[in-house]
Length: 421
Image 1 (cartoon, rainbow, N blue to C red):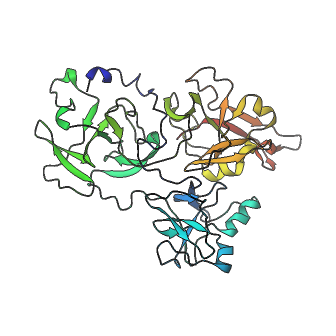
Image 2 (image 1 turned 135 degrees about the vertical axis):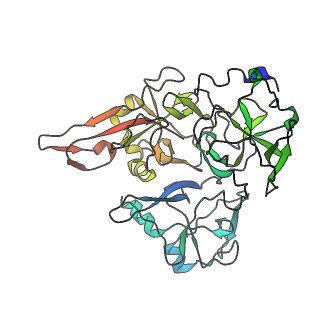
Image 3 (image 1 turned 60 degrees about the vertical axis):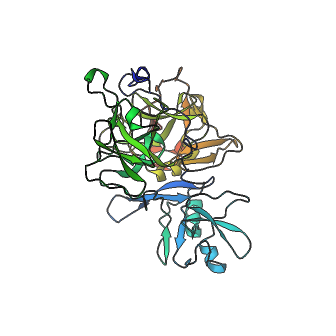
């Protein structure tokens, strides 16, 4: 490895651009097949805030997928007739390829439905009716039905100092250390990685993940011995490191710094062509061919303010309820919907909505995506945290018609924010 390639890799603290080639993520298996999405599922309790249950599988309309206790034979559905009316099978397209935990369950009528970990998947007719009526759907659980949750860490045996977590900056689920910092694999021999230098002047930005002296192999993890006699963890035969440019959990600023280092991903998320993740003034940001992507939401009180680094988590359900109605008429003069190609298919966190004019627009984690006319060059984030006040009328009421909402008393606003991964 040429040490010169590492000089200046911090790119001015954390303003490095992350490589946009996320799809397939260098051969890493994707989390979902085309047409299967990921939805933040919440369970609401009386007099309490919604409780996040986990990432559930879903379809492009935002309907969550379920499994049934009656399906006891792998890849075989026991839900027909009346059962299938209440819980329609989630059918797979013809000639689809299966992989990993994804298989097909053959039905009596000859059709095939998706199965995850060999459990057939279904939607809920009640949930579909709630969505069609504009009512916030609950979770269609009970009676032997369960949410089909995305749990890529299950079954992955790890050492005590390593965990499998969502790494937003790497667009996937991967390995992290005790502090939640992203782990990277090195494509080469630890004896030639250039990390054994004792002179501080030639110290590298990559820190070997030390293994205790009594460490034993577990699952895909083994122990390798370095030139100085210390032990280091390796994953699937490749030694593991952290990167000193990652200061907080979820960042992956070491991506694309050098081809010898890659994020240690277990599964990757689908990303449309031309999409990347960059660290900009306000944190990790989705970009489309270099242009900042934004979402619009209805104002709610958020402790910590809207300018917090990496933004504040926005509920999937609110974005889905807003849909493409969050920007129309005059709004479209400055804000341009990020269009999806005609043959694009929803997958993972990416869904597709059809606007009133028939164009298809990408949605990310439930929120419609836009670019801002005020961003003149790559790196601009001039549209972040712009608020549009909703004025009250003479009767003290305001209208949220532009946001697809009714009216109410007092005042409100819609705000724009960078689309954070």
